[in-house]
Image (cartoon, rainbow, N blue to C red; front, side, top):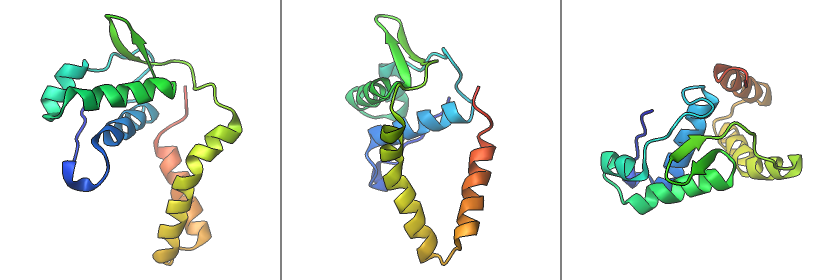
Length: 128
């Protein structure tokens, strides 16, 4: 798995890592029980503070994306997060609003936006 960070992007580095791990899982680049790189190794490769990687891993574990085995590393969690549908929708709402605003700014029609979202979802493949 390759992670790239852009320190000057305005997006916190830990969020960049979290987003890329989630994307890798959704795209089946990372699968159930795959081991992620150790915190120190990934931090050294990215030339960032290990605490930043640790924070990303902790947030992903809190969200149910990863599971940590003490002394054994971080693995892709096989169980979907046990969140209520209302919580899942609450988490996605800001992203949906951002996407809708961008589409309106670009004068993209509702049907075109929905098709774009469907196409993007399909590219990720079906969940296992």
